[in-house]
Structure formats: structure tokens, C-alpha cells
Image (tube, helix red, strand yellow):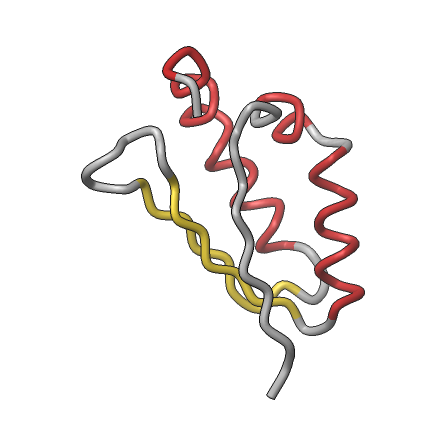
Length: 82
């Protein structure tokens, strides 16, 4: 993420984490700032279903977090249920 966005992301992140963990279907949501690159955050999340994940993504797009983190590069690896 750009350096200019780091402060705003750090300020809003606790609220985003709280709201995500309160979502129906959210099983795990962990965010850790990378020790070597402070502009990188590693996220691990589990949702009960594909629908729960899609609802989460929809909420994020229309949230304060979504506006603040608009410039955050995202790389996903999505794995299905075993």
C-alpha cells in the first residue's frame, strides 16, 4: 500500500476487524502487520460458506474501511472446504 495510506489504514483497522468478526459466518479473522514491510498486512480468514465470504466482501466494498483501503493491493488464495 502507498505510504500515504498507512496511517489511515492503521487507524481504521481495529474497527474493520471488530465488524468482520461480528459478521454471521465469520469463523476466523486475523490481521498481522508484516515485520519487514510495514506497508503489508497478512490476513487469514475463514468463513462458514462461500455465501458468508461474499456477503463480507459486499459489506467491505460499501464500508468506511473499503473507502480507506481502496489503494491496498490484495492477493487472495481461496481454498474450498475439505
